[in-house]
Image (tube, rainbow over all chains, first blue to last red; front, side, top):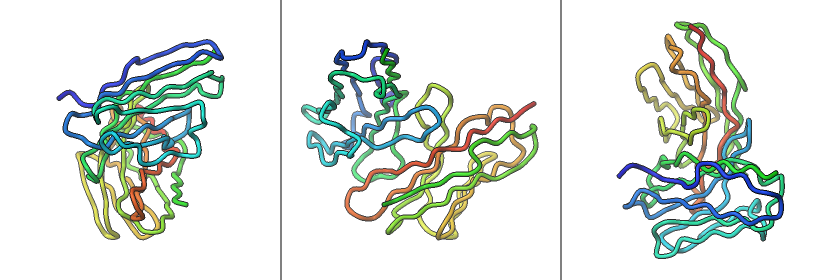
Length: 113
Length: 111
């Protein structure tokens, strides 16, 4: 297992377009997290899944954001009608049950122009 | 609401010049305090977990310590390859709370 994979690494999109990111967690990890990080800030929690169930969503996750984890494996994060304020690094992490120390992927950097 | 404050925001050291980074936190009940290293354009890399006051963990030139209100990351005789942003995060005991991160300390070690 090579760790948490995220695709794409970079995405440039025009304002108003929809984008979708994918995360493949470590195979035996049942928990998957999405975070957003802007320049000079720490990661901010967006949402997390235990297996296929989405258990918590942050107030940061507006109606334009939706996340899925079908079959409890990979996850997708979709942003509809992107805005310039959505420009950030989107990080995915995974863990096994409540083990400490999430393993993060390298992130997807989104630029909205 | 769980909060993490890291200081300084940025730190510039000469190679070999030891120093400490601070992480102050407020949490209703601490399940764990975490230190991560983040290189530019990459995701955070896990370094340490501390669970209770008085605990210490070491890895190469890094040592993390924990009190009831703060944690320190001590860097002994740093090298240029230690340059990175160091992030501190806490996880509370209530429910399935996710990690809450500070803004990080950007460390530069000059040869």
